[in-house]
Length: 361
Image (tube, rainbow, N blue to C red):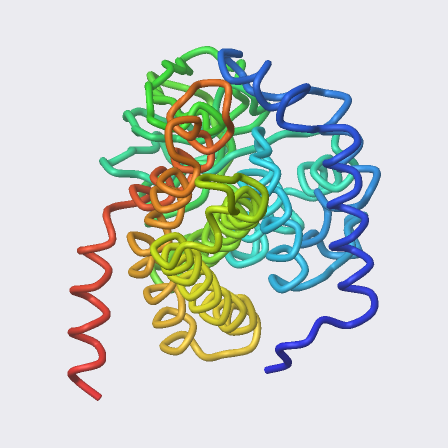
């Protein structure tokens, strides 16, 4: 595992960072979308596609770049640092990895091409309840309800895991198909839109079988990519707080000269750098390690989520009273980090599983 980025990876990072600063700043892009029911700006989305970021994980045969999770993590970190809303993680990571991990590339060639060029938005409905597919054959219908589906209102295509006579499978459903209803769910993070999706006889296409091992691999990929996004958010709010501590004066000197504030800044730095090492390893493991090591890396990243969320809370302490105001961006970063902490279950569950796995070694 190489902890240093290549020249191409550095260029990808810098290009993405510059694009977000110029075309999708927090004041002019993120805040106006906070109350938007869909949470996507088409010009910015197509701009990300033009940069090649939506097709990073799409195989070259389908118009993508055929890159690895390391490159995807680089982009995810920059999106997190910019508090970027929208369906990039759902489309460019979750959908792309679900299709490739489960061997659905040929059946979903058009979908992959649309993801690569930015003309198609998709999301994956990870079930917290059973979804049934019937009858067997080409005219499949899905029935069931799934909560906490990210970016469902923005999606053109929904991927769902369901069971039919052929066993567990991955199914594609047009979001505008009859029998599909999408209901907003209110969450703490307004940059992350979540929905309850209900299938009531929705027409679907079976794309591939979905073995438990492959589904687990996709879930690991999604956790790892979201950890990279959270790392970016924590890094950004830490830097903003440190710069504030250098310039904000009290009693005739910068507050950063006070030991109590210095300790807060050091605590943030330590947490961010510990998270960085774990995320880099997990991104590498997603493509290069065996299933056990990959899953352990994903567990570690998620189990550390609670610690990473404290960076936003600590930053607000450094900002003082101004950090509690709506006008300051600190609360948006804290909410982004809290949503990561709650994503697919709280960290305690992952700590328990991680401890049990390590105890068996």
